[in-house]
Image 1 (tube, rainbow, N blue to C red):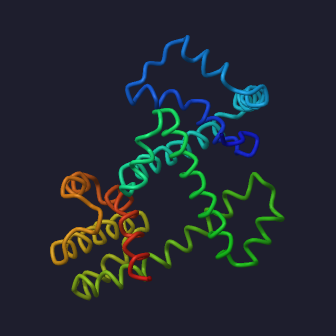
Image 2: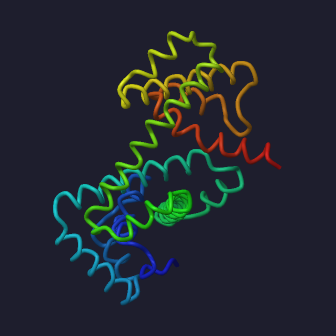
Length: 243
């Protein structure tokens, strides 16, 4: 079993609530079952969960909202991992109880998040890393958000130029899109990326491992959700081609 003491605050909060996902999967969640699960935990695990709960009670509403948002993103990633699992991984998941399945997907999502965090730090300019380390912890989010916004401005312009070429957009249309406010520009980029992927699938067929039904469900989503759910297949395809 994963050592809870090594997990961050958010992980402990989510793992403590794992029974909710189990109930959603069809497992009854009676008071007696909850007591049995609690009894099955070591004294160290119970102590840590109590301490985390006390920490939660002392968070501000803004801090709680931040935790809820991170939890929401983790839950979305867990669903993606479940839906896009390889045949081998799916067999392993199906052999688990609903609660253990939920736990494993959560830990996998957390590991991915840590890896993305390490990768982000490695690619940050040294002067920004130094500024973040010197800053008051309460200011670090704002500093990082400002940096991300500047990067999104620059990256979105370059992405639009690339999509304009791939989709044969007119020069006038490309310039019009580049002049859009950032949030509108990003929404349009998501639409164009989806259009590019759908056109490629029409030409080349579905990515390996994606069923017709899975693709049908993808097409029911908004452009942003479509791209997010499509990412695991895109990652696998890039990995396959790089071998």
